[in-house]
Length: 133
Image: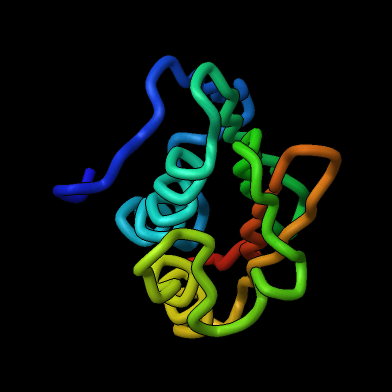
């Protein structure tokens, strides 16, 4: 948590059973570095008592990591979420989302996308499996 930031209390974090301990071809630190900024955004945007869900889908050739959260009041515009420098938080520069995009561009095997459904925002990290050998 950053000093001076206000987070809601009473949030519910739901972690599905499909989240693997390892992601083939990626270090744990790399995967955490992708998830943490999105999780921090989800926490900041969620109402008191809201839900944040982390799910993972493991397909034959790729992983999909979904972070879904309820939103307080101001749902972001889907096009804004894909603009460099966008932040829904006052006095922020959208560095978290850009950090995730930069990390994904380093390995050239992943992408970040968003969906807005009703009053929820769903961020999806897609990583192609990489094999060592």
